[in-house]
Image (cartoon, rainbow, N blue to C red; front, side, top):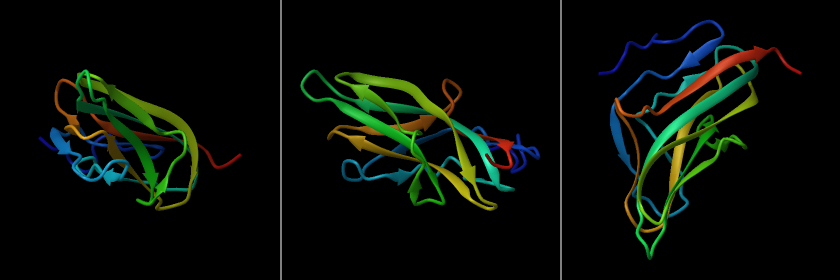
Length: 145
């Protein structure tokens, strides 16, 4: 079930709506793809924002081959936000949730999106359901340093 567009949004904070999905990462290794099921967050006014996310990933590694998922937040769909990278996976079938929280400067109408890439040749996914949510949050902290 998708919540209304204004779900968990206030004047100084934003949060994506809960959503159930499975996003297969099927592009070449280390090529970022947008996790399109997680809505973008549009910044309503400039300043320093505390941004954070959690992303539930699935990897299908084995004793001989490791499989990883790297997630990160991007600004305006093209610029990696340094410090938001998180890596999960290993030499086993694994589901885990990872994420980051940082402070970042944003301008009016900047957009935050969740992206991921895989490392390894096996199955890799980002997913969300009632057992583990994937989402992005932003809270306005200050008009600037």
